[in-house]
Length: 499
Image (cartoon, rainbow, N blue to C red; front, top):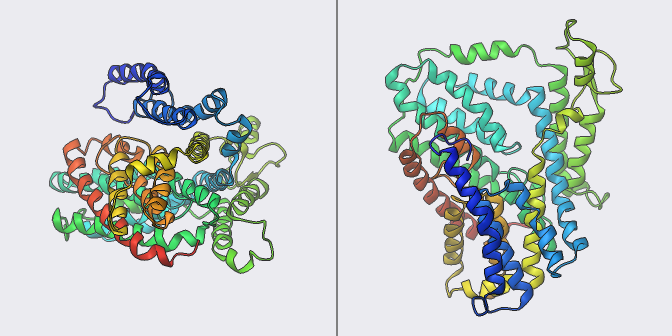
């Protein structure tokens, strides 16, 4: 929310202070007021905890990640689940899959490989709106499939602003909002393509694992890739034909992109080595079906952590090191035990800057999801929500609800709340649980209407080229596209996906 200039800091403080008090008050009301909630003590405590966490998540009473620690305190203190059982959720294998992936993404970022990839691809594009918008959509989505959508947006927006700066006033007025929109939306859509692209995917994989399924990097692609690809295509076509941006010659030359490409210089040894580790990791994930029987204990998480260890172990010549650097600076960059002139692909100092809070957030999400199941709250809520409808209508209903809830809450929080419930709803109405869970998982990532819905939305809004009205209008249309695509593909493809 800090990215939104139109929200005053005073309003933010007032809301957070109100939420800080309101959260525990709601918890106590649900817990103590007889007749308000008719259920046994254990599920009632979990329901009250959910309400408390939702209030804090919405109002940002304390940091989002810190709220995810509440289950570690409330559930053992209430004698619902022991601390030893709750704590295991914060060390789930999914956490380590994300940890390794984040470190790999961090190595790509600090080496500058992501920027080289983006600029080289943009250099291949033409000068018209069709090419530029399509290029930004493609580059942003591909990077976001493996990296934090916030990091990707933070890199792509300055590139877009550089191109906008050389446009004339008429083209800037028409193209600039569209460029900001495609970066924000493509960063979110790209996350659904791969298993490691966004936290809700990993929460789905963990809960599915508890149900006896093995959701791997490769098995996710048959659903994630079509959904992401179709939505990216729809975004591009919608801007070109509905907003009439096709065949507009945006800039007279590509000097801005060429200048950026010239600054890159030759690809460094560090970039080459990081690229090799990245390719090897993807290859190992995708080929595990062929060699996994020989190493049954090695799953995607083990591969991800192995890749991270390789990044710490491999050293290459530091081609950027200058003689003017003092010994302290050199030591800080290359790390202890590395000779002058060498650099690790990833140092611990660099790795320490990954978003560790996301790991805690997913751990808290899994703890809450397991508490739903352990206390039977998921079945209680499911019986209240279950409606007599065909499978396709149930998928449509769950997808629609999830998409619009995510406009106001973190996608991880929404996935946490929805997945245990929709799993039980599916069982209650005789559906395959994975169908509804997949619909909710995909929908939880795709929120487009409000600046506060995702960090990329907020960053794009902060550029000054977007209005709330424009985002709501564009986002509502993209929400409808998302609901339609998810409903259709989950209904059609899921029966053929083998987890």
